[in-house]
Amino acid sequence: MEFFVCNWLTLDRIGTDLLATTQEVAERFNIQPLMSDSVLPTIIVPARLASSRFPSKLLADAGGKPLILRTAERIRDQAPEFDLIFAVDGEELSDILQKAGFSTIKTSPDLPSGTDRIAQANESLGKDLIINIQADEPMVLREHILALTEGLSKENADLSTLAVPFLSPEDIRDPNQVKVVLDRMGFALYFSRSPIPYDRTIEHGISNAALKHLGMYGYRNTFLKKFSAMEQGVLENMEKLEQLRALEMGFKIAVQFVRNGTIGVDTREDLDKIDFS
Image (tube, rainbow, N blue to C red; front, side, top):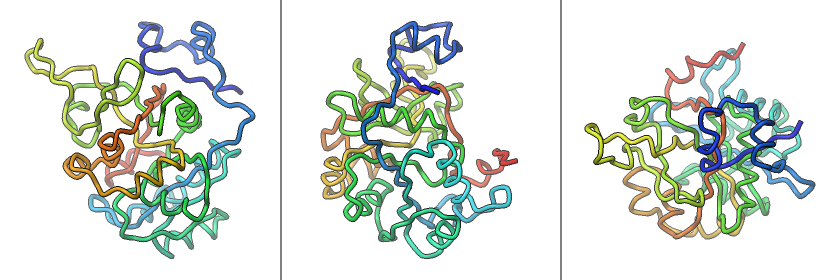
């Protein structure tokens, strides 16, 4: 089966046909298959036990298995041709994963972000292209992984990430659902927990110009080395969004529009929404 993706500008042209099949979209706009015979990126999953909103969430019961194992099995099922490694912060997560047949590499528990954890792991691994899937994303889809891979091939892209439309004004107001606005070439201008941009032409000011960011990334090793060498940025510390360090440093983030969102587990309530049967 071939998979296709296009950015938000292309999908905007589809208009009311947004529910057309992926194949129909590909044929209409002459979109080429994502994958080629070139070397695939390596998926590295940053995994740390500490979590302020949901303590030890990666060990939480997710339908009879630890959440971290659900994510591992999902990635293996959705993208079996990709190498998969977990960058963990200690023995507890490492033991669970290794007993289930997954590869792990130890990293410092004191790193400030998942990207820093991947950068440290890749100092030993030496991979040129890396996909970052969060350890609390047990519903990740193949289309997400392929879209991140395609984003890395975009001209001038230093890294790639994903976005989907918001479904309601309430979601846009939710600070746990990160907003991203793009330039005309599909690169990120800014990410925020606040509703952006403010629309002065309407009473409540809530615009639908922003997309919902999905916290998965594709990297080049050259970017990771520079990123991890820099201190956390002012905007990054304010919003607690690691991707803002990349923007503050002048890197270009290609944002790939995907059809389906995912359910990241930030709270116990998020986990309770997922049916693992």
